[in-house]
Image (cartoon, rainbow, N blue to C red; front, top):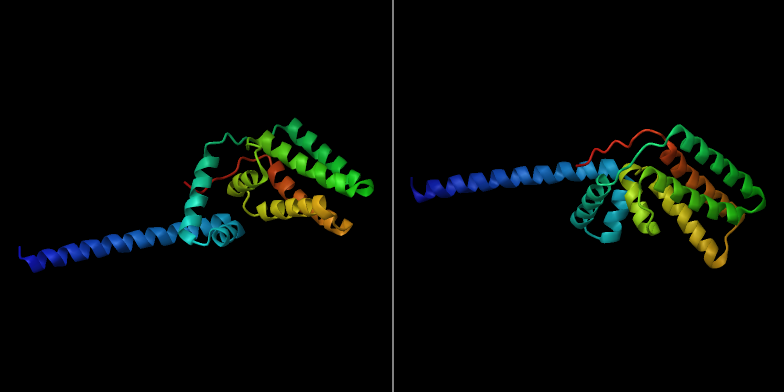
Length: 183
């Protein structure tokens, strides 16, 4: 075998490896975008680099896959529904208190399902793996609550926070196990 033949074979092999690698990375990026939706875009924007953001999202999915996420029992489901009804009723007389209660209730529901209840950012990251469509609601509700704690916000903003918390609450209350498509 001549040197030129060997170089040609090595070039073809390297090119094939590169094509396969780029194909894999492209499919993986598409999977992450499809799974995480707006959370993918937010993470890329925050990190400033798609590869680093994808590595973070992969790590997040692996971390959450180790949690023992469970369905709620029918009794727990009813208890949380009743607690949410109380939060909504409280809004009439105490909008700010209702928002604070909604935040606590959502955190309690997350804990009941098996998510660790650490700081807000960690909770939002964790819930984004199984509930990516509603995590923007959680972030928005929290942001309104933080703004209210700093300087107060209008009652309409507090109402919007309740609506956002409700979106996550409803998704978490679903008694089915999350379907994880990421590995």
